[in-house]
Length: 218
Image 1 (spheres, rainbow, N blue to C red):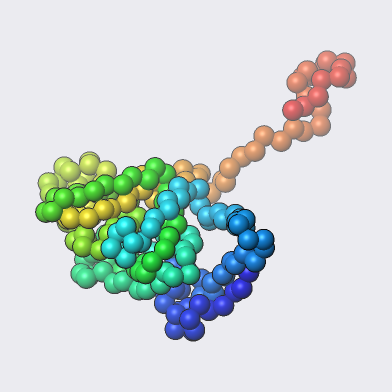
Image 2 (image 1 turned 30 degrees about the horizontal axis):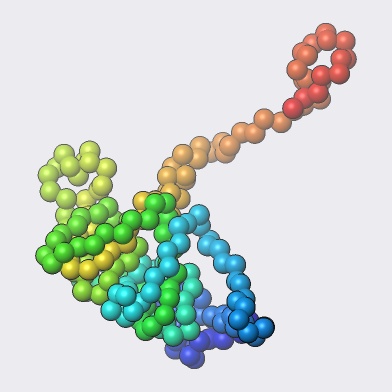
């Protein structure tokens, strides 16, 4: 294991902007020939992990901020900015995206169910903001306002949706981490916290007058 800035301070700063660490660890196996060395990796959030070969997708994939788990040493992590102010502000992905370029494999993480969708030339896919994991270079990425007052108020998708136009491949996630965290926070009682059942002396299952039997609080 060798931890470095992976190309200098500027390269580390670029990775930090895309949701990665400034420092990066390289793992190299130096054991017996013909045998592989194994590295176990995990995510900071319950996730699905997909392994992608960049050469199969034209040498470049653009992902949401922080989506990369690991990659071959031949892969570069670059900063990709959204082309429109509205896309960065309302798209749920932010203004900065990850550009994964080069050759070799990358492992990308996604919350909930991971879905791959192949879009044809001119085919449009509209998804809930925040559900986009990544897309192949050539996909047009934009944000559209939901039409109709009732759709905005009662549709559950809010005011904006992400619009993806082919050709190319897109990857979607069914449970964005930010959405799950907000749902948990919304259900936490305010003010009183969460009550826990704690057994108290003299308050066993037998109740009063059980004569000090051998029932034990659980």
